Image (cartoon, rainbow, N blue to C red; front, side, top):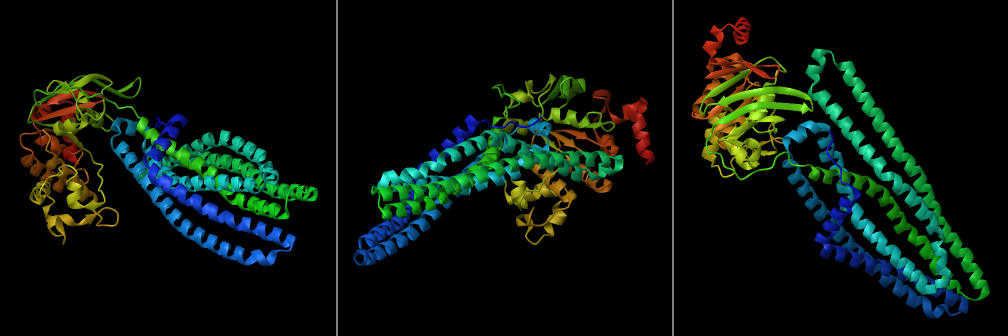
Length: 577
């Protein structure tokens, strides 16, 4: 599954909306650059006047005045360009800041079920490569395109004011320029979409191989992963080659369309001068305009290529907002804290259920351990009980209300999930903890860290809770990061918690001590502990054995051991290790 991509209509609509939201600073940029362009047109016009004066034998009368006028025009253009470029940069940064904030808001609201099905590569590509490409186009491309367009229009207008009969020669390169650009534009968008998708797939393959290096090595999957990466590299190379071929047609055609107006102006101007219908000065002025107009038009063509890349990336960024929600919150309120699963089924792929007709009642305040072999469906069951995924069939309810009918903010107040995968955000330890409880005091933060046995190492830090962590700050060990995540859970304070091997990164003795500490803090709350260490099951009120997507045994530890079933065999095997 891939995340959606915005179509051209939505892309144009969003672009117009961004420009409308910043129309006042945009108008300032256009006015300043327009005035700068007008100042730049004064020089060629004065040159034409001087040429005509020389031809007429009146050079002495005009040179001094033209020199002063040229100096004033150059100074005015320099000042105007300085402020125009500053205004354009500020505009680009502001527009991109709004775009980035909207994107981050959208990403953080994505359904987790969609993110997991799409895989990490696609979303990672959009948040890195696509953001980089889009920011370059938004910060620099949009202002420069507007400026180059204004300069081109004003230059053409000035040429026709000087002498319309000579100025028509400037249009000789237009047919070739239009044909080349249209040919390129028809092919560029799908080519760049293919290129972006290829790099997203390559990023995903490499990151997954690095993250799963131990598993790949243990299972001897190295050749398969190398083959996958090689295939992704070939596709990226082919996609990059396709866009390069497009540019090898675009740029020569554009260069030729720049040469034609200059040659045509000189030749056609010579004919008109010979006929006495145009002055040498007018031809000289318009010839200089023909040379000068190639710079803004060339910039337009350059950004035409860059905007195709940026537009494709922007379409992928906006496409994230097209992801449909995986649930529709209702108005019903839970009438209790009991979590129940009835005839629960789930399939990551249609027709391939990984949970089969699971029935389970979580008694308020109990501690339930879920055990079973790898791949049995334990983690999937935990995610269903936490409301991460909507069921394929059946239901999971809290207080007789389906979890998927609750707004996410309310859902997390009832049920929360902590997995073995933890992330430390850039900022202080206090800021990391307050993600769960923004209004928590320092005393409450310290109490939460003490509850997860992290008070010792936290107290040894010179800056305590204000210690900077994450990129550029203190690097927390995996075990410490896990404790921070568990402390967030303590602060969140839901009535039901799902711990998916949440202490797996701690050594067995520290893990057991932590679990006992948590048991004291979380007394009265319902805890579902998905465990690979059976001492967790030994300490639980009940144990659920999951195998092949079904609960095969359910009951207290002592009862299941005495029944001499699957759990008893697991217990004996674990004791012998």
